[in-house]
Image (tube, rainbow over all chains, first blue to last red; front, side, top):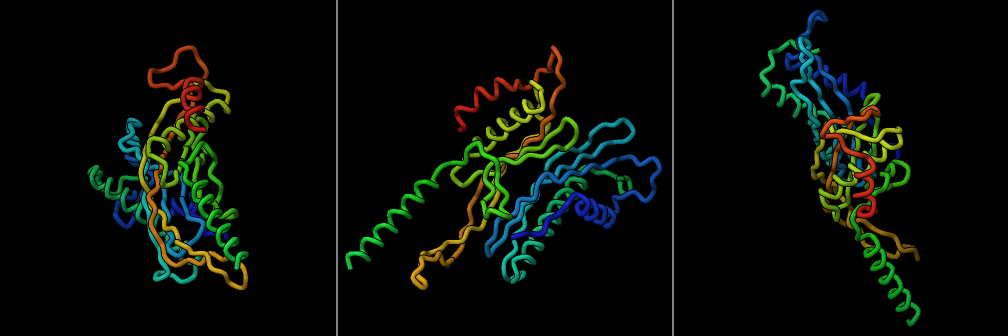
Length: 124
Length: 162
């Protein structure tokens, strides 16, 4: 069965939206203090079944522009479970599980970001 | 009557053999894509992140230990380095975790004269997952202290993992 997939572009867009909603994203291109690099290492999807658990593995690397010092570099894994109660059709269920897993991953990263005490509107 | 008993006996033996055959930890094997094969995705997969950086992800079956998936990842890292014509690499990041997978529980039923597995319930398996990020080092005479020698890693782990 051909499951829906999540690519790097979709991940970047989702992250941009989340950072913007939480006020972390810089609104100007000039002299942004922090640079964020994100890489989708893998999206582990099950071959099928009723309950679908998808695990996303994403690397986040945050660098201070001033001196190129890496202030955060970690791999975050996050899972999401979708059941037939969420969506009866398996393809839709997998799409929900994919999106949920990416959302959970970004949410975990935002938690780390808050703990780093980075001022808002500073990330590109 | 005797033929039915013989058939049931054969089925039971086949099921036992199947279970015994599957009851092994994951070895050093490439993870097959589940999309076309229905495979469970056990084994290693890797990706190039940048010119000299690679990511390796290893998913083990529930019988596999966390240490074993970490070692499979390390062995794959050594093979990638060798394939790229290098002799040493460094580990940038490593992580070993446990993931969950929902597995259907089926019972074999005769439907229209054919034995069909019918799912009746689900269980959740816990499977070890290793993630490794590596950087290949350029060929030179002096390597940093934390550099790993491909030949050493392959020699130490190959026999144990295959």
